[in-house]
Image (cartoon, rainbow, N blue to C red):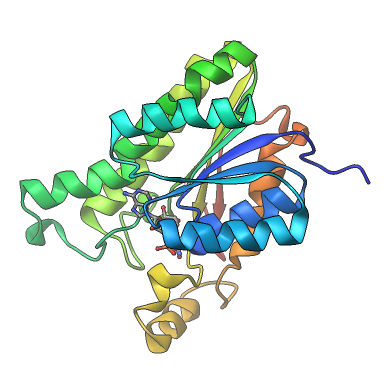
Length: 253
Ligand SMILES: NC(=O)c1ccc[n+]([C@@H]2O[C@H](COP(=O)([O-])OP(=O)(O)OC[C@H]3O[C@@H](n4cnc5c(N)ncnc54)[C@H](O)[C@@H]3O)[C@@H](O)[C@H]2O)c1
């Protein structure tokens, strides 16, 4: 069988839960070896066991905080030592305590949100960038949010929406800088997907959000994973600096 991502190596951050775990699943399904990165080691081990059993590909876990630049640099070296290369980086870790307005924030809480949802993307890109430049190829896929397009909306507001908008800007700037090295950088901006991040707000909240959408349903993390697999593959040969919005028609961007 000719697998879409055979012999590719992918790093997925936020891989212990929700969308990141679904992305890791789909990349492994399509034949990629996957480095799973998260702060939640227990969650990572569970996903590792599941994926190894299901797909017979190489899975390794890396417990790291995406806001810890120094640790990420060490982790990048460990990943290259283990896998020999990095073809794909998916920046998915994020979230945090998101439903806070500008009036609720002080400088510290604001910085924490920007650190987790924006600066971390830069740090993780730095973790693999030189290796991708050396290889003269790579795919970076940043998971932002529809909140970054419409100033918040469902859950995330203020700092979260600002950070996610910044991710789209960073994607374009990085795509420009890294294009000469054969590195593609794109953003996916999801709307409502039912994961631990959103389901803590309860069924009534989820239903009320669905009602606002043209498609009146939530996105499935597995389907988002398939989109990531496409962007990670050679089929996305002519796509860079783009943003794909997956929101059931909320923003109609
Ligand atoms: N679920 C949605 O509806 C939705 C919509 C738009 C955007 N997003 C974005 O998708 C991404 C994944 O969200 P999700 O719904 O799967 O959330 P989730 O809470 O289920 O998963 C987030 C993962 O990130 C990890 N993480 C958090 N902080 C980290 C840190 N400092 N270092 C390393 N790992 C860390 C968590 O441990 C967790 O495994 C987030 O960036 C989120 O902003 C989600």
